[in-house]
Image (cartoon, rainbow, N blue to C red; front, side):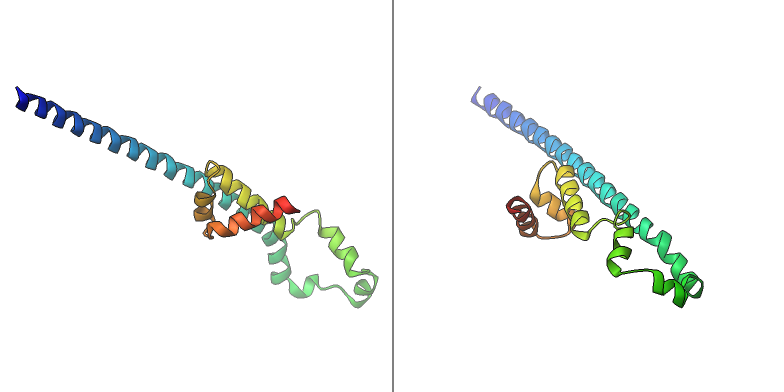
Amino acid sequence: MFEGKCDVVAVAEEELDKQGQKESQSEVIRAIRDVDIAIDQIRESFSLIFGMLEDRGHEWIDNYEAVQPSSSENHDEGKIEELTSRHRSKVKPLWLVEREAIQSAIAASGGSITRAAVLLEVAPSTLYRKLRSWEDA
């Protein structure tokens, strides 16, 4: 009779172990999906950014002489501040792109700074430092 109870306990423990493994596997699968989503979002962001830059960049590189302003055009262009203000609406500042990428990675990681750091391939301390600096500003 005592032997039968031991077998029941052993069987119960085995079943609990199997359930734990299944739950662990589903958590890992869920985490992998989250990481895949975050990576896709980051890739999409970079594609948009680099796509905007490439649209203009190839034109200038391929037709360098054709797109060079003549000396009279160059004289009338104005100050550097005017040139940058014309293009400011087309290009985001680097700090803003960085902030959006970090926020996107944190959201994709379910709020986990450590997981977001893994996605962004930086140390978690870097993200904590950035977040703290944004709060102070």
